[in-house]
Length: 358
Image (cartoon, rainbow, N blue to C red; front, side):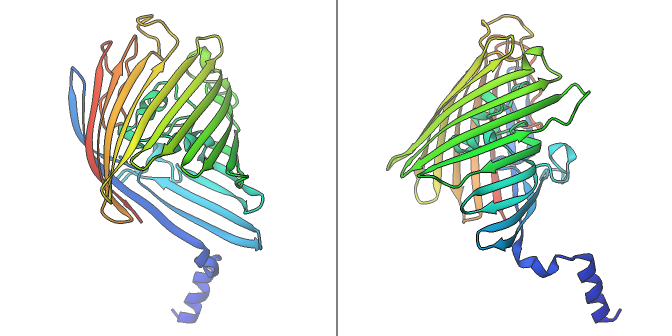
């Protein structure tokens, strides 16, 4: 084919090629070997996304004025161990948004995306490794995940409209509304989530509120829920200290709560030691009944990261989940153990892996 005609054909097929400088291709490749065990069985497996979920994506902007940009993000998760799509096989399961961005007025994004609850939980998680996170066990791995959790939906939501404010004296506000769009189905919920974050020197502090209304395929008490989240971190010369507390009200049921304390300690120029301990109280008396879906758990974890470069990190973790009362919870990821069949089971997760950002 004539090179000139080929060029015209390519330009017609990719009409934004002239703006390629404003589009960035990025991603994460993360894989780890994990050992998961309880009193009955154990499994050793190769898994994806220990320190961060493996992903690839495209993001871009277009200048509309001196202070206004159009912006989009398309981001899909994938499994390093199998090469398949994550998030249930979605093409862009992690994020698919388009919106506007202004340094003066903030940013608005529409589409599937992390909610302010996801970001809030991640900011105040001292370990922040999916299989090694105490916060994930307290709020994300249960059968009824919280709106403030660093692991599972609804922390990332379809049909979401989100606003992020600029900083006002160190305070930033994020708010999101999630449309259900599932009328007539067993799962038909709306979410409203707002967070306030304050940053000053070495202190970070935050408050979050969330509301869910509608129907689910779980127990009736999940149809309407209110959540409050309080958290803070403080950097000292030798460590960063973390504390958070969450409270959830459920329609027609006892409220449940969760708390976590932890620290991140620098080790040399490239290492970080991470420690955390926390508990979830379901508001249900221990031992009543065996099929209670949100009973008590406690968890503690230790993690370590070592930066080989700005883009490549080695990591390791150990976490113990202690099921109490009628809880029968296991530890992420899906390549780990199935849920325990006995009461009062302790579940352990041990792993080491490599993370690379491109």
